[in-house]
Every structure is written in C-alpha cells, then in structure tokens.
Image (cartoon, rainbow, N blue to C red; front, top):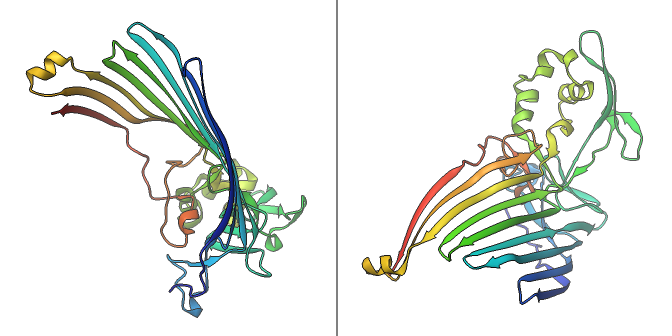
Length: 329
C-alpha cells in the first residue's frame, strides 16, 4: 500500500571543485566539495499492520522535512616513474559523507524504518538506536545484577526505563581505494586494487540468533567466564549493543597481470589485437568486524530496506581466479 500524500523531493546544492595537472600532467588532482539540502526527502518508516500496512517486509515511504548532506570527493593520480620500457602509475581516491536530518514530520523527532533503526532529528539517516548497558555485575551463579544502561545524557539508569541511544551510522562516512599499475615494454601490465570503507557499524545477525534465540553462546552456558556487560545484554534480550560492531575494512579487491600479444602474432591469427590476462579478486580482507562479511546485507523481515546494515545468513565473498583471452578483429 502506497502513500497518496507522497511528494517529489526538492533540493538545493552547492558544488565546487578543482581539476589540476602538474609536471606535464604526471601528477593530477580532482577535488570536489558538495553540500546539498533536500526538502521533502523520501524516507521509509514502519507503520502498524492494524491500519492496513504490512510491517514486513515493505515499509511506507514518506516525505521528511529536510536532510543535509555534505562531503568531499578526491581523486589523485601520479606517474612517479617512466623510463624506457618501464612506467609506474598510482591512483588514490577517497570520498567522505556526513548527513543529518534537520526535520521530520511536524511535531515528530524520530521514526523507525526497521528494527533498531531510527530516522532521528540531528543524526544521520537510518542510524542505529537501542539501549546500551554501561555497567553490570554477575552473582555467584552467573546471573547479571546491578545492571545499568546509558540514560542518553551521560549518566545511567535502570535498563527497564532506559531510552534508545545513538549507537552509530549504518552507511560509511569515508570510503576509497588505491590502485598501482606497473607497465613493462608496453605489453605486460601488473595491476592491484585495494579499497576500504570506514565510519559505520553493522549488525551481526548470526551472533544475535545464536546468542539470544538459539541460546548457544559461551555466555549462555558459562556466564562467569564472560564479560558481565555482554552477559547482561544477552540475558536482557532486546539490547543489541554487543552485536552492532564497527564494520570498517580494507580489501585486496584485485590483483591482475595481462599480456598484449605482439602484432606479428595477432596478424598471423587474422586479428587486429589480442591479449591474455590472469586476475584474482576478493583475495583478502583486513577487518575487526567479528561477523562473516562486513559487506553483506540481509534484507529479510523488518530490516529497514536500503538503510539496513544487518549481516545474517550470508557467506563471505568467494575469492576468484579468472583467466581471460581477448581477441579483436
């Protein structure tokens, strides 16, 4: 069921940038700053099934009051070495984004697009919000006692009356990549690509299911060996702070070598050009994220649509080795 009152978004954007080359264009830089304020931003929210809207999996879209987005985009390239048959090219790109909800509906400061998610005035779109345990103790048999939660104002309060507090963004605030290329004799090309994302958190749904639904975590069986705060969050059920984790990562996305065949060889085949390449993709990931895959997204059930950062029931990306033969006629 749609929203008959949905209107088009309207925005004002400022964008400035530079594009410059130096040393006979062996060094180049492209830098852009943008700032965009959108009025009637289209966001999603959960609504009660009792009024005719399905809460799972389709939310209702609505117009927010205003959202501010700003950031920079940088592309830097250089050829630090080029002599005879050897040349080296380096490329680095990075993009930042900060966004903030300035207003929602009249008299409304927050709405939920999905479980543990909120569009909240003053915070990024689709942020994590939930209770957070800040102190706890265990009794002689491992039951949590004296459990206190964050009161949202720098203090503590009993968890039964604790508010949902901001836990982090669901979308990266910084992402980028670095790619070196080595060319030999104009025919052999060695290429690598590293990329990264940081400044956001992901919900480890596998740990959530294992610890709070199937009750199969260490803390469920031997709580005295665990962290009292984590034991308390697991026992209290609806406190997800321990499985909403920093999902920053650096990936060795690709390594490849390619060889362009000499013209005499291609002419013998009746072709204009030919090359052969070997590429490895998704070869290694550096991350402190404790789940299976920091890039996975689980959209089943009430998970917040495009703002969901759940990782559950997904496998890590497979490493791939690809051989390619290309012939042009």
